[in-house]
Length: 492
Ligand code: NAD
Image 1 (cartoon, helix red, strand yellow):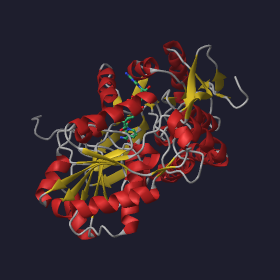
Image 2: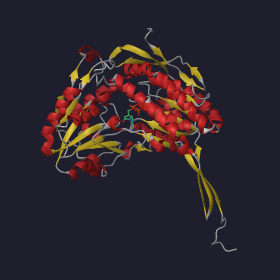
Image 3: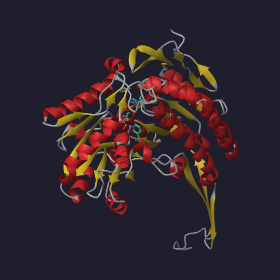
Image 4: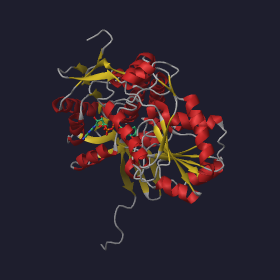
């Protein structure tokens, strides 16, 4: 092990927990370099973490919300101080550009603060007194929550669950993805240390850890972000003991370009291009299919490619000039290549875009030069499936009705975007089947943690962020003291 290699532990019941077997995380820019090791926890370790959380429930749920908030604010401060170190580690193990790693932590902090600021108002009793009597709505914590996060935004997609769960009085056990476990484990430990033992527990590992976290009878609620196929398994696993679930799953987000979009609007074109290729396209909520009026297809493509060549710079994620790093892992790289080749076989034209800044790394790492795919059909895999990589098809449409039909022609419904004159774009947006539709922006650029986020159709169940994101971790308990306590229609 070299001095630069990082070792993170699990964190169970307020203590570090080591394992013999480790997950080895390589640097996707230079796969021969090991970034560090995370524990490979077992199902037994996971049961231990769940039991610790269960034991903490009574005390934590009885802790005044003001104390939970104060602890959360201290955790925010500690994580903020650690940002430079954690962001660099995240960029190295994940492959995302350093400023996107910093941005991910900034979004996490913004949400943790927002959730803390809203907790009193959202979780307080609602009392109604009228001629019928008195009714109190009390928001009860649910019990032990399990959280499972994916590799693409490991820190923000973990804190999105941890903050509301514990503010609402629920201890949590969280499992990040083995494909980016290091920075997130450090971040979670920093947060966990601000809370009593057993309130925040961290385990790492493969699917079997996730299976325990979604089947153990002591778990009351599962908060999952990841692929739709895994989401289906989790839903089945949750059914046996009727666990509450929030599922944030895959997306295949359409972007509709309206005829009144100005292809010469450089700022808007840059926004679209950046949203497509930031983090090498490994974002659930980016435009994965662009629909353009047939009459402006060629001028749009020309300007889009021009912008991509100007703004997209591929290379070492630690170089602040770089907008697009390597793909996180080899299997994902091969999958994206397969989709592009399939489109090519079906007659599509593939244009490479962006500038490669570090040729030496490009050849050894899991890099893919971003591509724009022209002439693909709606039924091609590159259009139907979620690419999760630096490639995007641009597809012509005849009229607005067809654009909306094509956009909605998907099993997914996470986010979407409409580009053009604002009022016109809003009118079109209302007809799209999605959890969020952004106007003249897309992806993380248009994310606002004050509002609910989540999908329709096979993109998920439930919402994170916003007040809904807090309410997802409580149940409504109605305490009803009516004046008239008898059913009048039952004869005496
Ligand atoms: P994945 O489904 O392969 O893995 C996600 C997590 O689930 C990992 O921690 C994994 O170890 C765990 N897991 C795997 N099998 C499991 C099982 N049977 N039971 C319980 N846990 C199990 O997803 P991924 O490849 O890490 O992430 C990419 C996917 O996540 C994409 O589809 C992307 O769109 C989606 N995503 C969605 C959102 C959103 O907010 N909707 C955000 C980010 C990513």
